[in-house]
Image (cartoon, rainbow, N blue to C red; front, side, top):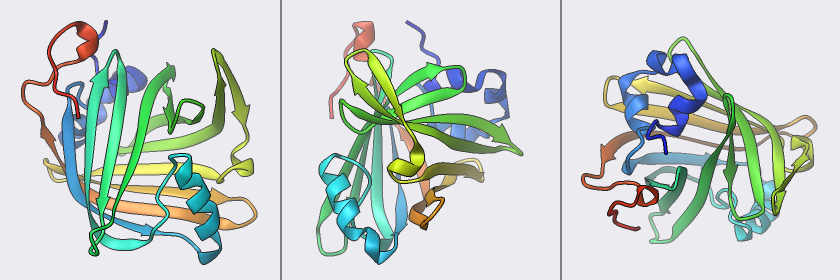
Length: 208
C-alpha cells in the first residue's frame, strides 16, 4: 500500500509546486488543523441546509471567526476528516467526511455511505484549486453521477499558503439560477499527531 499523500497521488508532479504549509496540511500521517471559520449563506437556504445536515452534509448555522478543529486520519488508504465547529454559546457541530482517490487528479468526498462529491484538483500560481465535477450516489459498487445543479450547485475551493506554517481556504457553492448558496472561509495551522500510523498497514494508531 502506498504511503504517498492522497493529494500527492492526485497532483503528480504538481505536488512539488505546493507550498510547505499545504504539503503539511495534506501529509499522509494523521494530523490536526486548528483555526477559525466564517460561514455564510442566504436565509432561504436555512431549511434546505438543515435537511442536508441530517444527511451529514455541510453546516446549517452561520457565524464569524468560529473556533474550528479539523482532524484527519488515514485508514486503509482512505482519508477521514472530522471538522468540529464550536460556537460561542457552546453548541458544537461535527461535519465528517472521507476521501477516496477517483483516478487521475480527481477525488470523491463522501459525507455518508451513499452520497459524495467528485472534484478535480490543480495548482496555479502556488494556489490549490478544486472544481466540482458532479455529485455521486453510491449504490454498492455502482456510482451514479448527479448534476451539480440538482443538489447544491457548483463547488469550488481555493487554498493558499500564508507564510510557511499557515494556509487559508475558501469553499463556495454557486447555483446557475440562485447564485451563491453557501460559503465558508478560514485560516488554519496544521500539527502532526506524533506516533499515529495507518491502521490499514497493520501498525498501531490511536482512534478519534
